[in-house]
Length: 271
Image (cartoon, rainbow, N blue to C red):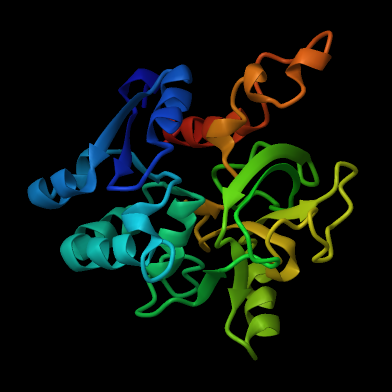
């Protein structure tokens, strides 16, 4: 597929606030990206018109009940069969921050056996309990399964911002070891929180900004086509978005966030 023919849908609902930055990042890479309200997709049942879908960051429906759950249940209730067909066709889905929360609440991630009828994980209230907005580091753990990062060498350290109050990744008590083993076995673990030297946070704040189990910052499904992460790649796309750009004599044109979007585009271009 030619790059200019790739069509990506950036979904939005009331409360999303990162859709414009996400679209801009994709357009910068030469693909067609459209911001579409979820109601329009639901009304016209036209999700299959797109090659990929992005659930962007924000506070969908005001994070009522818990972050991402209302959007997730609405999508499943009104668009469940089409979403299932989209996933079975191995079309990529990216969930960023609130979008990651949506995918977990919908049972799409971790997706050990496909879409689960109930969430197999949670993104709970941060520990310590506060809204955390800061630049952090994450380490690439994937060995090539995740289509978004397969061209990035393992152990690369990214500098990228987080902005959330419910980002603590966790599994059901008593199943942590079992599910973590499956993540590693299926090569579903994509990013872990670390320091600038690549040393794992081991749960220490603020290196781990939310208390996530095993320092987990991002995972994919077993097929590697659905990816969710708490940090914001669209906020680390350009050099001028980085917090210390005024202190540097020379900076690369793009930030680390570009690599994630580039992975998506390269996959679609070669499909």
